[in-house]
Length: 307
Image 1 (spheres, rainbow, N blue to C red):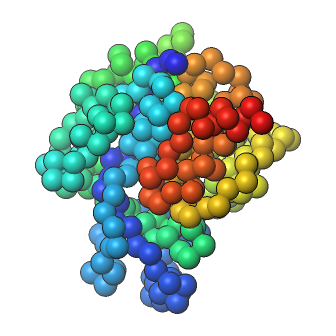
Image 2 (image 1 turned 90 degrees about the vertical axis):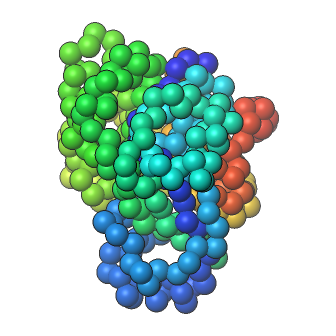
């Protein structure tokens, strides 16, 4: 199935299930509170935030790695978590999902955290704090350069520091055969230096991210895969439709799309086929709770593609 590396965040998710009225209160209290489908990074979580209803595993880097592994790809995750990761079973959960974890570093900071607010319609708003993700530096990334450059596909997001990632991508420019680099531009704040790197082959914004990135996209030379929820994925002038599903929670659907898409391209699938498979998988993932609660099997995806 090919090799996939994911260089990115590893989080412990604090999941909230607020009422519409409770969400409105948060929006009124914090002018930075994310809108539907948006991820916002903050330095600290307000003490007034409600207690979470559930604790789960997350982080865009980790989620995308798990999704790629579910499709049978040979997947390794690169990033850092804190000394508290063992308490939450982070490493064992990743290994159980078939992700290689030997390159993950342990930072002095606590493991990154995401507060995921899932509204009554199943849509999400995410507030993240970096924690150990913020300790990913040039030294760590370049130490693993040989493995990263040898991957068929490299998954990137914007939940770790931009500087070491841009340094990596600039070095890729000197390579004759760099990996196929896929960038999920979330959160949007500060992501422009990554988009401007010419080795980025695919960019996968959702609706709100696409609107915020209009200026950056005018000079982007790769392919934009614009995910538009239940309306599917827009690739150039084409739309790849979603299968009918009964969504419960959209958290992690974008991560499933990215991971499955990377697995498809790493295995040699055409762009169209990889997008179709990833779109189906992402849609099915919304039928379960949590970022990794419903990652479908290859057989489930193929059954729908064959209809």
